[in-house]
Image 1 (cartoon, rainbow, N blue to C red):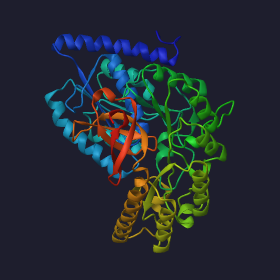
Image 2 (spheres, one colour):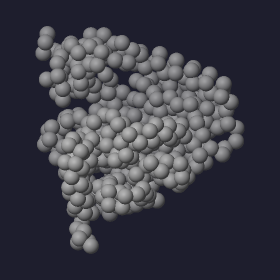
Image 3 (cartoon, helix red, strand yellow):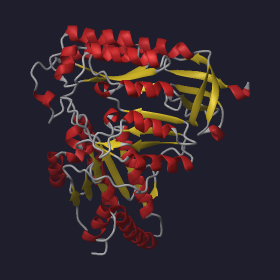
Length: 472
């Protein structure tokens, strides 16, 4: 075979070129460009995967558009909650009619949802108009799979149960020219009892630090000033490397990169957040003053059922350490309400943590059964009306506290990375402070991608209005 002697990246570039030749022929035949669209569901890991898919599609020769009437539509799916699956099935039903009007179009599905065998069986049986199905472990093979679909003329399914393979140096197209996500690891070993992620993303595997540094340096040379380091649990980075390196040590090295202004990371599991990491966060000015630290529940009993491996007391001690080391840090969190067996007393423990920590914001979720997880078969499922009442009470407390916490910067001057022209008022630009709080102020598109000192004139609960110091 022609590709036998090539590295995996070289093989994929070979298939990109083969697909590009096919796209060129199709465009000549149709007398117009072929278009493609990537629709992303789910987390920042999925968003990063979609940048890679977009980069490959562009290399193949497609023109990217934001429409499901494109010649190639790919859904990058999430399966954290079962209703996410239903949304995808609904979209696929609509796509059947669109494809009838454009029989040459391709529809592809990838991501976490595809790692569930029953989903793939349903697609094979009921959604025959889908052309390509692959999962989370072999995204790097996208060009090869497209080539197979072109040459074989039938539905292509390629699902891997797991992998230890990490393929570097493939194309990716950033959503923003000035910031990007960088995968530092893949998979998860935690097996929280409510979570499907370890089953669909596989076991933890860390990228080599040299490859991460090289990718960031390349991005910075291309105009990036802020990176978000991504992993299901970044705090356990390095454990699978032949020469182990802690996440804190990796951060030190990344902060030495010239031209890089800001470093963010997520997600951090409280059980693995070390004193060494807290020290690095305190000492390195490039590390953003924001930490997303999922709580999930304030009850030690519920945390044990969730298999989170920390207690309420452990979590509060951790917050105390963080606040002593980084007094200006903003904390955000995830909280699940109505986990099986949750009593009113358990819920009040959660409210107590919310009061004591004072989060800048919290992502609050009503527990929903996720088939395939231990929690789905637990007894003592909480009645729906009770869960909704608790959820509303939690939301009210979170919002009241967050509005008060966020206002502490009013009247100060803060650096803001400008991200876009404001959608509601084009005379304003919108950006984020180091602590991830949104700021709107007078400006134009020339400021996008720049870090600007802004005087914060007024807090509007969860965002600020401000004035550029340079304009004063």
